[in-house]
Length: 313
Image 1 (cartoon, rainbow, N blue to C red):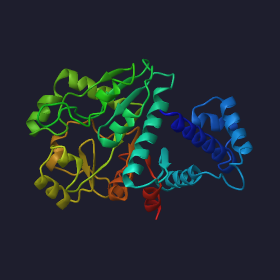
Image 2 (image 1 turned 120 degrees about the vertical axis):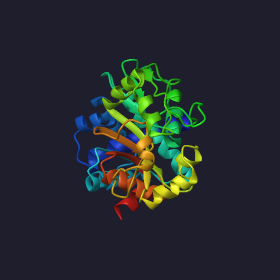
Image 3 (image 1 turned 90 degrees about the vertical axis):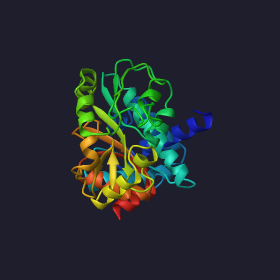
Image 4 (image 1 turned 45 degrees about the vertical axis):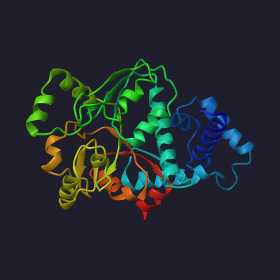
């Protein structure tokens, strides 16, 4: 991370501390807990915000507006976690900002001292998030893939996240050596019956936190672009009401998993209970994001302020 980026992140953290203390009414102990810092650090950040002139009648920083939106999203949709990043120059830059914010959230979990199982999905946003990470010594944790790491042609999936993570952390990592979607139901049952794969899936089911991406079902859906399903399958999914997918699992506007079609052949871990944080930005993903939340497929979100406003409209 460059010196300018470190300075900006420090200012963002100071603004967060000020917002939590002066606007949300948190105590300094609560501020420290939410930011994952010591009470002394929280006290210093609150003091810095005041002395710098950042705190007036409101927190005078763009992140304050995003914190308001995040709180509103949590209240409206019952989310356990929410992070909203400012909209920047354009959609592409905002997507990058969402990835970096997701990387910061992942890093905060990696830095926790208690041993954890952390589950990782796949996709462009998550890969960019992991690439943003510094090297972290966190051998107390176990990091497990929630979805297959094999591309349709048998090669390593390009947007696989776990193998990128192995370059960043000292924790043990557990890949899932299957395709995201098997060619047939029989192939899926054969693969999932293997002891090693069953063991990895059982570990994933015990994850303390899971990070996933959300894909929209469209002609440019990642499932199609990355070669997992052909265009005619996308059309069939749309005809059945599919709006999005997570880990290859397709669902409708209410978050109901679709019966038949590709879901019969998905090798990824089931979308089960527990803290599941989705990284997704852009209004084109709005139906998919809302569907995933309505259906309880995710209960945490990292997104951008434009998407957040549309969700609340």
